Image: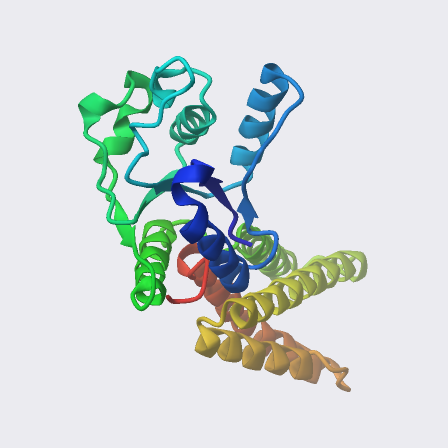
Length: 283
């Protein structure tokens, strides 16, 4: 699940802020957004921000017309306070190298670099995206989603699928190489070794089945790459059918020869999905 950290000044963005939160919850799920981080003390708050940010991929910064002009009761700019919550959260997002997406509300513009304290000055180099009220609200949010999807597209779609596919491929190649070495040397005591080889082969098949199932579920959940999920499911079905018990040693040998390239093809598809599959649905 894609998680985001929302950074905003409530008074400056109150109306559109609530709509943006509802929109993100509807699109990415009720637990996809972190906002209003609190702590009983300053150290606890700083630790909470650091912990929550570590679980997020994206930091959304809501910028209103008064974003850099807001002042405290003493007349000092809020953003100049090193422990201003907005400054603290942006500083943490920069430190953890999160994707920062500024959303410009009520026709606000991006702050100039000289308007910002040095520790959050890089924010001024990010591209801001305007978010307006109706009738442009829905289209502006789609633009922001496209930016998020584009910037995150290079990341692995699923580390689980990628790791499982690599493990299955390694197990399969190991069993194949061991079988070739063992039976090519004409050793007599092949029963125990053959059992180990076949067990390794079955382990690789089970790993591929688990990773393939995860691929299908990910594709369905993200409403993306449906053709890949269908191809993977079809190959898995062939693998299951081919692994059904058959009679005769020659038939079993032919079955194994059929399954080896089939599972290798499946591993290749899973690795492809793990590397370049989209993290979220196309916006």
